[in-house]
Length: 282
Image: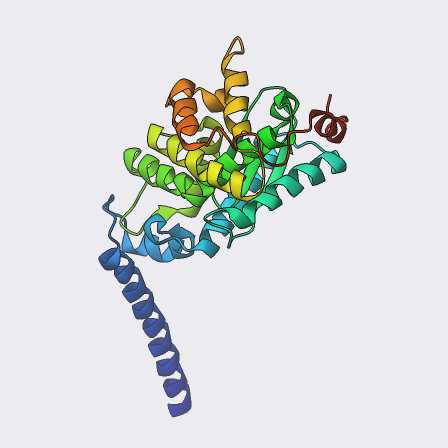
């Protein structure tokens, strides 16, 4: 009888110890978070604790994992990826050539081709870059295409997607005292990737970072301006150039940075070679 009582007491004590630890962990999340938000039940936090993330202290590993989840949802529900192995290998080779010269080369990057006639490119957090077949066809040479990819790498290097997610979550009241629910973060990341609401400051910053990366990788820097001018003269400005600031302002800022004497010095200006590489895209 005494053994039964002793075992029962130990089990009861263990259950309460686990409950107390859970309460302390959840309380710590509330007390240590620097982000204001809506009140949330402490028991709800215990139940959902593994799903809560803090955007203000997101590590590289966590960002890559979140970006992977966003990408999984994008490619399964929103995007039709091109299946041509040669084209995908070519685009990936361009992207991987640029990565070592970016300000953020210590995370893995994934470059994907989206089957879409619209001229577009975008990126999400964690190193995921998307380029449409329409944009690939619109470019005159590899350097022009590389300029777009380097711009998107610039967004990732500046962690603009995380900033946008934080601002949007706060504006929509989605952030609790503990942080942002991971599932909510993934859905928000998909929305932001497709809607591309980059600010004037973000676009200028991605342009400058992209230009530095493009040049350091050995491509002709003038290709970035050439491609923008080409797209600016089309009947309708492509979606990825239609956000603030105006294309003319971006061209002016880039032109002031590029030395005219070396604008066309570098790789990627051979149009015939480029057309041969992308010939399977219709």
